[in-house]
Image (cartoon, rainbow, N blue to C red):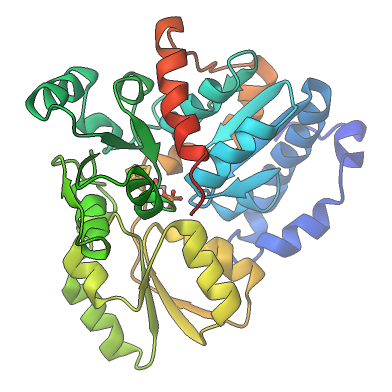
Length: 333
Ligand code: 13P
Ligand code: SF4
């Protein structure tokens, strides 16, 4: 391990930070991570940079270097507000692209360019154009988990946190909600008065959960509260006590304070909540997102040291894709 410089040592009280993550980071691993944390804090000041971290980032990122944390909607809102010169997106590529759309003049970095998303990979701009031709006049609501090229072909975006409100805001009888089939079907269950057509895209993390997983956990932990993400199949959501975005799940835990809870979503979600809610028992199962897990402290440090990997959006896509995101941000849930 390289020596920690005095400036780095002075950057922040590292032992305080370890107290936050010690349930998730073995003591033997902390010195190496602490050096990255201190270097990142220093680089953030030098570069006037902020780190935005999604709720699925590992606790050693989420609780030590992130300036703004949240679900996709919160990260998009905060990206639109920041006055930093540099945004490091500790999340996946579509989140960094959304930040860039909202801040075309700023430098947006992603620590690992391969941090993708199975939903974003499930549909292309040509697919959206074909859908528009085959469904003339039907508004296209596109999940933010898509490329800028797909957003640019859409009427407006949504996240799992505002999908229902976005569809309602249109006031039409028929909507295309793409590309997450399960999110569309889950919103359909809440809005029977609107016909919601979809696409066969799935989240590779949430599609792996089954109703049997939930029944097993209820048997093993009687009385457990089950929270599910709406990217899960509808049969899974039907077995849950509550379904909502990662921010909505956090809100449920922090306001309702269940004694025991299972989060049917990505594993770091519960780990991050456990740090702030030690009296709540979080039980498995959960699944890891391999894309989110590509981001590490050492890659965030490298991103800030080398100012890579810069996320760019072709100039002809910025205005139409941004318009779809901004129309979404104007909808109040
Ligand atoms: P949220 O918007 O609920 O944070 O979800 C994003 C995501 O990628 C879930 O898989
Ligand atoms: Fe995409 Fe699913 Fe990973 Fe979220 S959890 S980034 S939807 S693959």
